[in-house]
Image 1 (cartoon, each protein chain N blue to C red):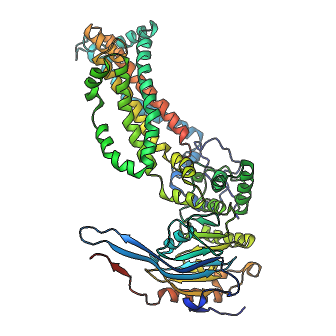
Image 2 (image 1 turned 180 degrees about the vertical axis):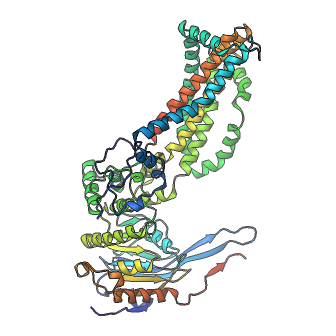
Image 3 (image 1 turned 90 degrees about the vertical axis):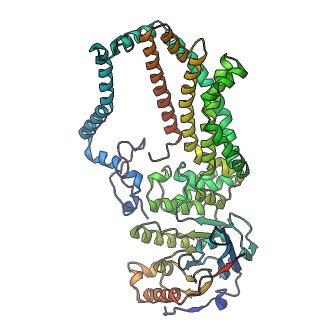
Length: 291
Length: 303
């Protein structure tokens, strides 16, 4: 294992493997919001994401870091199909994203579980929408809860679960309909440090077990390096890909019993991402409207 | 992998009985969700005798004001602080109350009033909830109608009583109609609010799970609105009795409101007080009933 913290500019690291088609592809994605004016300010246009291009290969775990307000969550909404890009396209397996779809599962920071449904019934929610018969739904939901380590907690309501457990339920729910891509929006940010580390390892295990393509948005550099095969560093507003860093670290069994976070290679990667994040930023871009 | 169960089953935690209640896992620190900390756990630590004493204290505290009030009611007329003719001692009123219960007079009046209140309330619930849902779910409708409804709601229903009597006569219709009117607005407005204030995150996540408009509505928006809707329903129930009693006092041949004014005119003062006591009891009973239903419908809330 060589120590290669390969940082390269966004343009030439579009596809990790030019041969394989990307599972998830961003093509010059731009998203603007109109900021409502008031007495003092005229309405203006806020560019949240600008000219963002990126390819994510099938089965890859990519983490996205950026300063706050870099449009991380906007990006997620766009991939989820909950909003549409102002220009550019997002493709999943070559098909353009036009709305929410079951090829993408989302895990939100605040769990977003329905409080009146048990863990099991929360996981079943998406399956109900797809019209799966009840016995089948129950089977799948049990299976996914077991996958995230929550066997035996099927009948618990969200308020009876800890934060970590709630997020596990949310992951199970997002995996229930076997999406090709799993999108995670700072899923562990609200958890305490211990639970977070635990869930990070859980996520890696689930990722290996399912082979899903995962886009993991975070504001934690360490988390990004720990989880990602590649770390995408976004610049501040508007969000652009500043650089993509390949993380080359021992994984899985190689790791047994060691603390990866103190490994010199980990530390080096961490530092590379830190430097990329703290490089002099472009000034926030706000194009004035009728002012 | 966590297979530990966090400590949560306090004495009030519900029907589940976990064998491993006391196992605190690695995940446990994250369990510090505000609603589950606090009282329940405090109670669990204190154990049986402490809890009994605590319950005793609660009962004592909440009944103290009643005892003082009833004592004053009993003593003031007896000691000549007020004229016993206008305010008979509590014991006299209770004796009359007992007699009226025994001979069925009160049951008859309560029955008449309840039939009116319940019919009006039921009509209001059956149309105001669907109407509120429609208005709340439709942005345009809500924008157009909300201010108007707000004005109607703030027009005291009783001020319209003369209008109802003019238009619908002094029979059952006008009384039920005014109850319907008084009940509709709390239900309507709380339903609109309930539907409109559903956590956007829940909607977003449900949409990402592929729920269509209809499924989103029945599976997410409606259940989420239930607690808010029910607050309106409870307010409506209170309003129904309040407005009905007043309407019955103005013009009726039966009912609790009628009974109170009737006994007053005929100088049956203890009977009048017995009627008032009955109204208080009916009000408390109705509210207790609705609180129970509300708890059932929103058991998933931590409270």
